[in-house]
Every structure is written in C-alpha cells, then in structure tokens.
Length: 113
Image (cartoon, rainbow, N blue to C red):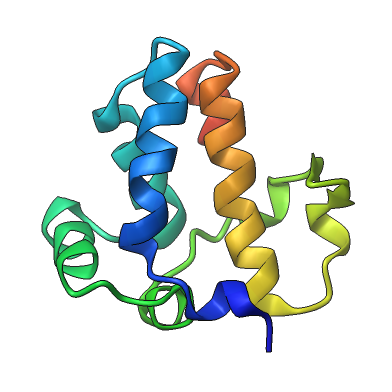
C-alpha cells in the first residue's frame, strides 16, 4: 500500500488551496471541483477535513462523478488514465483537477461540462 493512502486529506488541502489561490483562483472554486469529483457537499468536505480522514477513507466514502473517465493527462509524469490502482487513480484525478484549476482552465472545462 502506498504511503499516500494513509495521509490525511486535511494535511494536503491547505496546499491545494495555496496552489490555486497563488494562481488567482479561489477556495470556493477548489471546493466546487472536489464536490464535482467526490459528491461531497461543503458540510461533508468540512467533516472529512475536521476528522482528518485519510485519502483511503475519503475516497471510500466518495460517490465518484460518472464522468471521471474524461479526466486524462499527466500528473507526476504518469498518465492518470493508465494508473492501475483504483485508489491511486482517484487521488491523481484530484491532483489533475487541482492542476487544471491552478493553470487557469475555465471551470466548465475543469468540470468536464
């Protein structure tokens, strides 16, 4: 099992916020992306952050968006669509969406609208 599976989402979330805000995007937009991917509304996301849920438990509780297969591209030198471990793929989907948001992509495109 990868070490990243046991890391709390709350420990990484501030880095996601900083990354998108540094590029002129907002925490609200980040939360919208997370909601689109996982189905967690603001209250559910806040609960996971407060409980310091691990990535493993976070994604086990998520209702993944049916359009996640449309998320393609490279994160950390690996094509997200080619990742074999389902949990690692979900984590990389999140990383990819955060990257796209930070790079200034239109929200409609980030959310595969």
